[in-house]
View (spheres, rainbow, N blue to C red):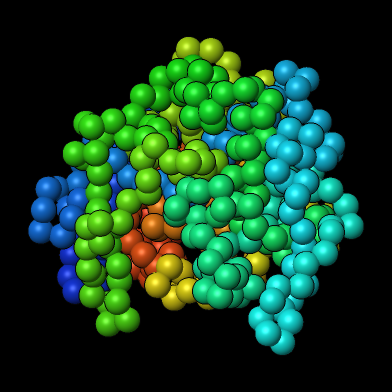
Length: 397
């Protein structure tokens, strides 16, 4: 579609120009058969090598859906009961307690959880875990008690107190890192090895991994910090660790965007891949449905560490849910994305959506902190809107 290319190119070039800009962006759109649009603009580092399709990104929380897929495969194989205590598969979970607050001297008040966390709760983000950049209690545990940041990819950064009893509410956090530990416990292999064998090879995904190859390192985009004045500063020393202590199923993968598009196409194609089936159609059918109960609400993510995240929310005012493991928009979005579609984002302002009704999906990749960057996030919404306008125009022609 010529109109699609023209419209998307305009968004990419607009967002990488002027004073309020992003350093660089790669964006792609696919249908069930292949790429409809691929574009790149700007640089991997301000003033440096141009962005292109071969650029490697820290994809942060867009890792989560891949870990969820690995867990769903364990269900299909009869190895994982989603409603059994998750400590059955990841014993360290059984040692974690609920934090109820802090004593006058700052000591955390801990108690045993009323129920065991299940893998279903982990996948739905109702397990009780959070992130220090979205939760003030975790931020205090980090500042006063040395709770490690998740970017350290250490045991300590996931072996944290629960914020509430499992199942009592929705809160976005390290639940999917624990789901990755469940997968490792079941398969007896590292999460990366499981993904390579059961997902990546079946989809022909090569340049995606928790540990970058030397070739991937040379093509990795630099994350930039946006200051309060809007200026961008390259964070040349900030990378997710290669060879991490824990392969973080919630945020640890590096990838090129064409590789991730193969994963999106699998979901558009009912679980089928070019080198074999990844999931059964019936699994895909229930896995994309909102799994939350009425009292569990997906809302704004409060940015309690301003350097890492702004207050952020997709489609304020619209009902949203969570599936296995994606956000679901339960109403049609302003971009044109229909109700029942799925998608999510990564901390350094990467965003994707999968619209199984229309048969289209896309990914927008930048490398900027804090999350919810007004330039990149607005650019992404403009990009998605341009896709749906172009498709509507093509149908009307």
